[in-house]
Image (tube, rainbow, N blue to C red; front, side):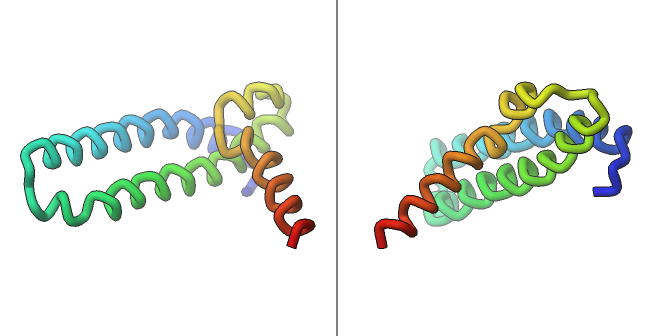
Length: 104
């Protein structure tokens, strides 16, 4: 949000680390499910929802970094959409929301 290009680059670089941590957490959870642990079976939906929500939060944060890099001429707009599914789907979600509002 400060417009600092080096910080924006660092945030994007950390995105891969977060993605690896998310995959690792999901794999560990699935392993516990295969083991048949009752506590894991009871909390599986919550666990996976938390992982998904953290990923979405991080994607939203990264969208700020993409904007900073784009403004600095370091990232073409096409790269933003390919790098961040939230950015890619945001116009579609807005259009769907507007359509639902109109049909009510």
